Image (cartoon, rainbow, N blue to C red; front, side, top):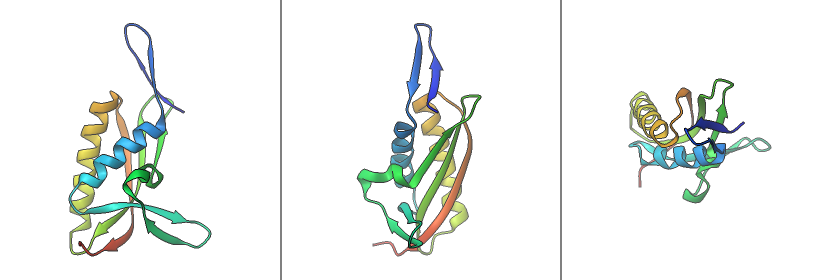
Length: 119
């Protein structure tokens, strides 16, 4: 389901891929996030996604009342408090995605799929 915003002149439809790509770009700017993760269901392996395929580490669901739910699969930096990373990610993504889309974020789920050393 795509997001919908009613303006005075008509209706604006926002595709979930657009929201996922924007949320992914905001997420990788956050301190402690190395990148987004893709999970191979066949092998059970986790791999770090390149910057041009960030939306594959995020799933977006638009609820019936036009609110956004985000699921992030991330790889975090070794030695940084995961709770602090998660709080920072939630605050930044919530603020920037709500400002970008004009829609409210209902929930953000973060799945830490791996830990990597900072280069």
